[in-house]
Structures are given as C-alpha cells and as structure tokens.
Image 1 (cartoon, rainbow, N blue to C red):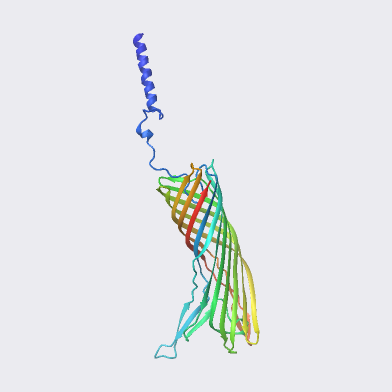
Image 2: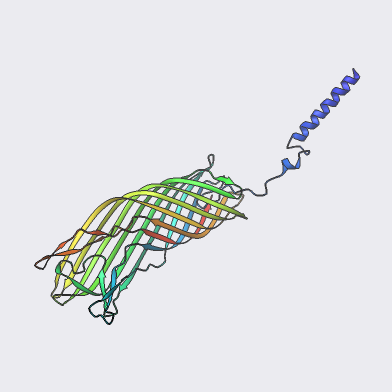
Length: 371
C-alpha cells in the first residue's frame, strides 16, 4: 500500500508540473508562447477616422489645385501662305488657341463618428474649389485668320472677320460626400479599408467671349459677345478603397482610389449679342436641359503621420500628398452657327455641343483631430 501511495503521489506531481508549464501565465511558459510580434498595425491609420476609444473626429484640408477641361479653346488660328513658284496654290496651317489654367486654393472639411463596438466610421465631408481665368485672343501676322469655335461672331447680320478678343472662364466646384467605412483589413505592414456612400455635386461653369472684328460687307467695326453657361447638379453612389503602408513611428505612405456614378441634370445655354455703329445691335438666346450620366474617378497618394496622445484619448493626424480627379462628360457648352439662306437673311443651325472631361489636380495638405 505504501508503494501504491508513493506512485500515486509521483503521478500527481508530474501532472501538476505539466499543467504549470502549459499555462501561459506561469513562469515556465516557453519563449515561443511569450514572444510578442515586432510590429503591430495601428488600429486606425486613415485621415478621416480614429482609433478604438475615439468617438468624434474632424479634419480639414488645404487644396492647391489646377483645373483643365477639353473643349474650351476660343478660336482656331489659320495661317495661309503661297509657296513659290506656284502662286495659284496656297497652304493653310491650323492651330488651336488653347487656354491656360493657373493653380488656385480650395478646401475640404469633414466630421465623423467612430462606432467603437463594430469599429466602423461614419463620415461627412464637403469639398469646395472655385477658380477663374482670363486669356487674350490675339492675331499678330497679317496672313493669320481667327475663326471662332463657339459659333459665328457675326450672328444674323452676316460674316465678320475677327481681329482680336478675350475669353473669361469661371468654375464653381462643390461636392458633399456621406460615407460609411467598415473595419480595416490588416496584413503585415499594410492595411486596407473599403468605403461606400453617396455623393452630391454642384459644378457650375461660365464662359464670356468678346470679339472685335470688321463686317466683311459693310466694312464697319463690330463687337460681339457670347455668354455661355454649363450648370450641372447630380447625385450618385460612391465607392473606394484606402491603403496604408506602415513604415514605423506613426509614419506611413497612403494611397486612395475612389469613384462615383452620378446621374444629374445639365442646364446649358448661350446668349449672343453683336454691336454695330449707330447703336445697331442683334442677338439670340438659346437654353437646353440634358439628363446624363457623369462618372468620376479620384486618386490620392502621399505621406502620413498619426499619433495617439494624452493617454491615447486624443488622436492627431498630418498628411501631405497629390491628387487627381476626373469628371467625365462634363462639358456640354453650346455653340451657335448661322447659315445664309439668301437675300442677306440668316437662320440658326442645330446648336453643336462641345464634349469634354473636367480634370482637377494638385497638392493637398491635411490635419485631423479625434477625441
């Protein structure tokens, strides 16, 4: 009996030791069980969000963009010359008088809330960018001719030979995004976060053209003005993906790709006036409405720093980068052309549309705060 009791006592001691070594809280735990990962992806790494424990967050961005749009060229310059030794033939060289945009400031501000139990974000942001330009229209060589790309500068009073002019353009761009973002997907040094939402857009464009010319029959000076507008208002679904490559010390390289399929209404029109000597004037007005799909794509990339401070109750974020935004099918400006029907009378042809895409690109500098 004593031997049996000793064996039972030894078995119980071995079992107790085995349980102690398998318990991760015991000092006998293996080094593999106690080893911690060398790097952990932060709980939150995007600009318009916050880490666990953070509720409300806000951000602001300074934008320094430049606009670009197809179909805004005011005139085409036609240069004619006669090569020797055949004076009966001539050649014409056509050159588009392109417009030039300058960089101008804008802003983007946002407010959101972090849903802690599900680790989701709700965000609303507003982007505003307004810009304008003024370009002269000049014809220097004597063998150079200007032809308007926005319609006949003589209107219903006949043909006018253009001498010079000017073009003024104004753009008002505003969007509001309402977005929901689920939790991050994390893989090693990378994190990804998709988002879906709704985007509303107001894109208002105005062009004013002024031409000085000579009536080719009456041989009197003329002044023609064309005022055109292209106003778009639309709403559509928005989807995108944010990615961060974490370098350590709160620094990461970010990339963002998003797009929306917005359907909206274009309200377009043109007002034409021509002024002749003796206070003679003529003009025409035309407006139209178009329902059309105008998708867009938005790409951003740059450098980011984020840090949780004050016992991890406050979240700070700084960002700097470059972004490119393209709105397709945004140019629906009208161009009016007249046709001679005999007897000095003119009639308006079917107005021509000037299709083109609107591009916005430039630098962005951001700061965010969560609490």
